[in-house]
Length: 262
Image (cartoon, rainbow, N blue to C red; front, side, top):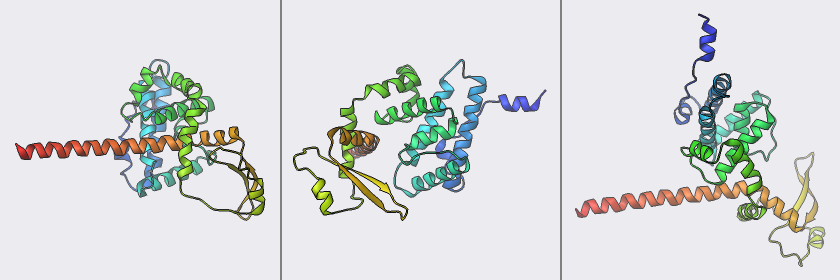
């Protein structure tokens, strides 16, 4: 019997993300996690691509869980993101600064097939915006008619108005820098009622940012805010998690109080 063939066709067992990310340093663990998902993806492509989506949904579920674990400002999330950056550099993947985290993970796992990576990452961003939990992701994909249908609905289904409202939360973020000049003030129109403005800048060789244009065009401002909609969606998700956690704690305290009375 061909041992190599048996090895290649053997099912790939995915260790839970929480267990895997506890192995060694978190910077190295993220690379191990992605490599494991790559092997699982290859196995799925060899053996199950034409007949079933369950394994695909499982791989995407792990990508989704990895994204959620790496989201945040705690030391674990920061180290995992640093590890992902190292993995991306080692494998020579190219991303822009605005590429969502989930899109980076999906590309690392599924390779360079742009159409497929785009479909999967779009579907995952839709799930994130709708605050789908990790455990419910496969059910969500099945009930929506599959990844491609979720991608299609996500591309055309969310109105610019909804995206603008989600993106508007960035206007309350901490101030990155303050600039003031007579030329900027002269370019500003007090007749415009839009909440924000767009400052078009270039990055200079010395590392500074040079403001080239002050834009108060409503469409441009809305487009900029819509581009930040994922930030607003993540903030809403974090708020919901806090509310849910508080509700659980309230239920626990209520139950304890009832036990004491009894």
